[in-house]
Length: 148
Image (cartoon, rainbow, N blue to C red; front, side):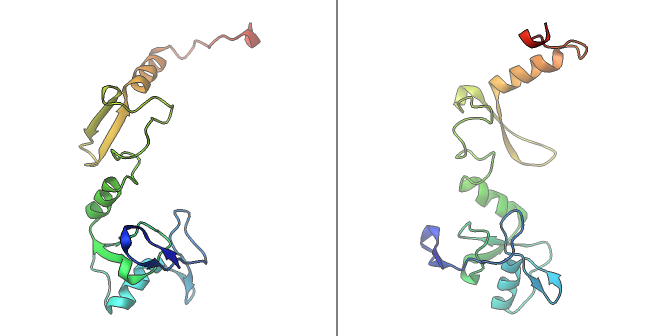
């Protein structure tokens, strides 16, 4: 057992097979299952309602403690991630962009993508650099001392 964040009590961490994302993923009766979902169903004696997700209050994907699991929508799950700074586009995430430019209000463009409804951020410096790169004709080759 591991102490959970947010004062929830101990997490029950699955030590067996996991998905690449870190969720408990054992084989039961020859079928692989997401164990946090199974744990919630066994604890509540019913199936997960259609279109709903089992969310971790503790943010520990390998935790299967039913008292740490709650039902919600995909939107609830995404909002948890953003609020807790676990989402790549959350306001609390990295202090710099993937190329190392500082995430300052002046250098960050925040917007909601209409096609996904997701909050996204763009580094203004990277955007200018990418715009210059795409405006260079593809038949030109960058010159360096090694190809002169």
